[in-house]
Amino acid sequence: MKKWVLGALIFILAYLFFIVSQVPAQWVVNKISLPKNVSLQGVKGTIWQANIKRIIIDGYSINEVTTDVNLLALLMLNVSVDTKFGGALFDGPEGEATLSHLLGDIEVSDTRVFMPANDIAQLLKDENINFYALQNATRRNETSYVQKKRYIPNYFVFSKYEKNLFKRSHNVKNFIPNGSIKAELAKKYFLKKKIKKNFFDICLISDPEIHLQTDDEFTQAKDMDKNSALVAEYCLRFSKKFKKKIIFMGKSDITQVDEKKYETEFYRNFISDRRFKIFFHHKKNFEAYKIILQSKVVIGCTSSLLRESFAFKKKVLCCKYVKDKNGILFPSEGICSLKNKNYIEFEKRLNKILKMNYSSYVKKIKNIDNLYFCKKNALKVLNDTLNNK
Image (cartoon, rainbow, N blue to C red; front, side):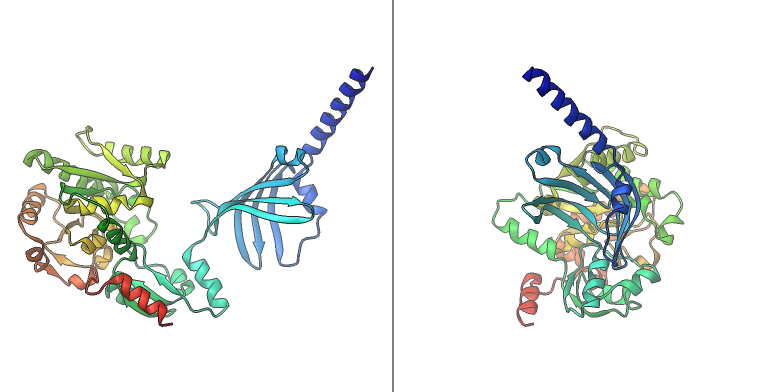
């Protein structure tokens, strides 16, 4: 008799659980009184697994929010909801968090949030907060919308060129040419380690995603994919002909499975010799900078690492095979840049660079101060500036 009652009780509980699990999330939202500054759009799914197209808080949008109730935590009388939001294809923040409710208190844990720098800056502007920003990559001419939205009171940049580039952005108040802080940190990190310099003759930097750029100056360029892959084709051909040691450095992190696959397939579509191998590295360990430090010449098309290589006093060859209005991506001319797409010209230029020492090479560069500011200790300048405020 007891077994029958227990079985019936389990059945009833399971049935009730099934009924509750099918309750639409929209129905629950309609029963909740939201604050006036909060609105929800496109609510779908059930209370157990819901998707919210957009949450708007004080006019700020959080897109593609998904919630998943943790059943195990619920059985332990602790309501726990795993939440994810945003993504690479959506505007606004991206991240995840776990919300728990136990004994009347709401706890937020395991939180990761990524926000566009301009969005953070706008929030700081509204609060009239002074701050410093660090340039992390080569910037380009941007739309009037971005220029209007940008707000940077103090901006540590790669070189004096950025001041000219952002002259239409009146919300950038103070430019501080100081090189790449990230590259300088990597240099300091490797001082404590035994790194074999000049181990590779050539470091080829992968530029696989150039065709995804949305700027007019790039989308209107013809044969972008083919031209950017041509750099890799020439480097591999050169290293084979002259028996040079080359490393093909990937853009994707070693942990990014899909990105690595895409990057490899991108080059397989254009490179005739498919025996090449791309080296994917751990970005968090400064491995890209380590490879640069170990190479005699760094070659690429659009990567910011070309400019950052000057922090390590490395010779660079930027192949300007892709349309680059006003030389924005690599704002200098001379021996360090090559526009001619003929392989013979590439071969002559690279052989010439390999035979030169660094000091002789630098003398052949026009407006090197536009590329990289390396006249002072960047980390010391940053530290002194922040401590004096």
